[in-house]
Length: 145
Image 1 (tube, rainbow, N blue to C red):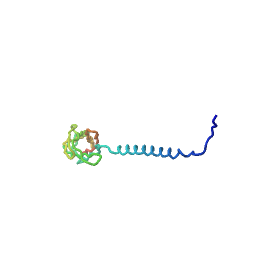
Image 2 (image 1 turned 45 degrees about the vertical axis):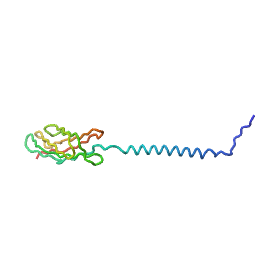
Image 3 (image 1 turned 90 degrees about the vertical axis):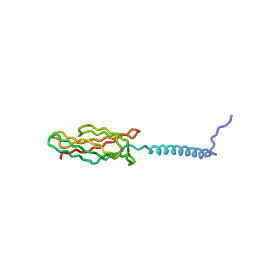
Image 4 (image 1 turned 120 degrees about the vertical axis):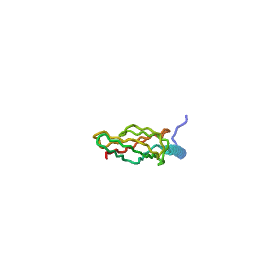
């Protein structure tokens, strides 16, 4: 029978090869991970903000107060570009809810209204666009003169 002995010679022969394999596999995994993170940063722009001119509407009267106003609306995406073809919904302290499809910079006519005994109110403006752009909202103030 053959005598089994543990040989201490040549014990390091496979370690450098195993180390190289581990480093190569680790670098490949790191490269894939960095690629995924880079692709995750390339998102499509979404609706970010609405700027309304004027940002305050004044109405006058002792009882129910109403006043016609023209709002110029600018809609911006997350890259800071103006967005066209947006559906805008205006509600709150208005006579009638307004829903219109507009381009950025268009003017929308509303009638701001406050009930008797109320001195302030707010109008909510919501912009929505399909194609993954989502929606955004802003509020303007209605004040009794």
